Image (cartoon, rainbow, N blue to C red; front, top):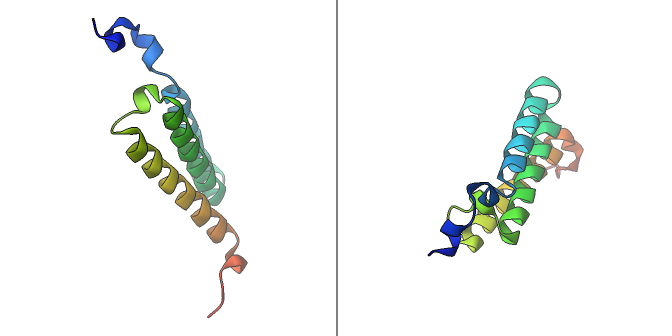
Amino acid sequence: MNARAARPADDRWGPYPLVVAGALLAMVYAVLVDPYWGGFALGAVLTLGALARLAGGGRLAVRRTATDTITLAVLGIALMAAAIVLAYPDLMPRP
C-alpha cells in the first residue's frame, strides 16, 4: 500500500489553508485600506508559502520542491520589494 494513500486526507492539507487565508486577507487589505502595504503583505504570505513548501508543503506541492520554493520565494520577494519602492519613491535613484 502506498504510504501517501495510507494517510488521512486531512493530514495532507498542511499549511495550505493558512496560505490561502493570508493571501485573501492581504488582498482585502490592499483593496480596502492601502494597496502598497497590502501588496507587501501578499508578498510576505507568498514567501511564507515558499518556506512552508520547503518544510513539507502538503497540498502546496505542485512540482518539484526546488521549483515550487524558488518560484514562490522570487515572486514573494519581488512583490515586497515593489511595494516598498512604490510606498517610498525616495528610495529610487534619481537619473
